[in-house]
Structures are given as structure tokens and as C-alpha cells.
Image (cartoon, rainbow, N blue to C red):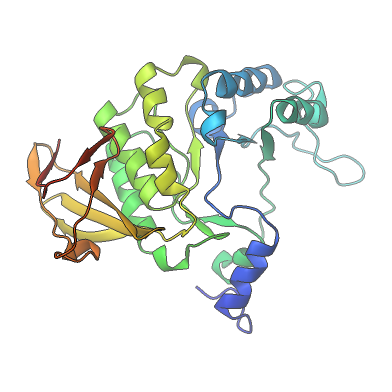
Length: 297
């Protein structure tokens, strides 16, 4: 990836950090996965209210992103984008005021097009970039996308994040265990955590996944190192990455069809086998003080 031939990596990183945006991966909600083009002003307002009332806003989901189909096809006579009068009759300013009044931020999709080879220039303009095709609500999609995003780990860091697309958690196409895996891997990869379901009708179990503060803290760790796949055999994988304060996050991921044990050594994840460690299960909210053979279904 070459953003500009005469721009060194350190200078590029400082450039992105200077704007103060996305020092940790962005968190919020995006309209596309669930609503696609069936979005309007009233729906967005009730989504905003639900982000607040469910407590999701309080744990960090602060962006409310309008994806495609919010704008008229033609711009005004000055060349400005125009909100669709049929679905956003009050205009974007009024909607933004509503979002801001509740302590959140409004994001808007736009796609200028016409520029090839974005890897050569996009990093100088954005704090995150898509690394894959569009996600869909299937196990095959999220596993494939995780593998694709894993390739680009060395380019991620504070202010510059690889984006494997929005979360599908809660949209109904996978099991709770699969959604938990989906959320875990996105967190470890330091992906933007953008909710893609209708939070107004989200189940208690969906909210528990999306609202897991300990997993969110992994994603938002200030060190900002993207976790990576360390080992894979017969659908049994070990993903890991360093965190601040000399901590390490590990995901034991069973991508197969049956229950199977997955083992990992301290050396595998960069820890000394001779020093005491505390192991914490972030989904069980418990600390484990013994050497562990983890089992994930």
C-alpha cells in the first residue's frame, strides 16, 4: 500500500492523528445492513432514541450514519447535495440538530467516484478504509471477510483503521454463538464497530453482545494494534494481539461444525511461560487463574 511516494509512514500517521478523529476505531450505527434504501427521517430519530435508551450510546456508540439513498439524484444549482424531500422533509440540518442534542454525531454517506487505485491516495483523506466487499448476514460472509481483513493488519493503528464493513449482529441470519464470534473478531481486529441492526427491536441477547464493555475495551484499547490470526487448522483458529499495560487478547475461534478443544501456549501469544498471569473470560465476566484448555462451540 503506497499512499504517496514521498510521504513516510510516520509523517502520514501524524497527519491522520492531527485531526483528532478516530484515535480509536469509530463506534456507532449505520443504516445500510438492515434498512438499505428504506430509510427516512422518522426512523433515524427513533434509532437515535433507542441508542440512548438501550445504553448503547453510553458505552461508546456515538455515530449515527446515514448510508446510501438519503440524497436526491441531482444536486442543487450550486452543486450541493440535497436530502430527499420525500424521506427527509426537514432537511439534514434539522436531523443533525436532533442527533447532536442527544450527545451523538451524524455521519453521511457520499461516493464521488471516478478515482482509481484508492490505496495510493485514500489514506491521506480518511481515518478508515474498507478492505473487503460488502458484508452479508451469513457465517460464510463474516469468516471470509475476517480472513481478507487480516491481510492488511500492519497498516492499522491509531487514526488509521481497516474497515471490514458493518456489524450484522442482531439481523437474524446467524446464531447467537456466531454473532458473538463475529463481534469478538471485529473487536480484536480493531475494526470500526458500526451496529447494522434495528436497535429499536433488538433482543436482550443482541444488546448483551453489542454492549459487552470488556470486549469493547479491547477494540478501543489506546495501543491500537490490530490482532491477527496466529494459527489455523481444520477450522480451529487462534487470533491474538497485544494490548496496553502489558496485556494480550486471545480469541479461540472454532469455525467448524462441531465442538472441539483449542489449545494455545503462553509463548504462542507472546507471554513468558515462567511468569504468573491472570486469564479473564470476557464473555463469562470471570477471571481464571489456572492454565486453560479452552473449549468453544
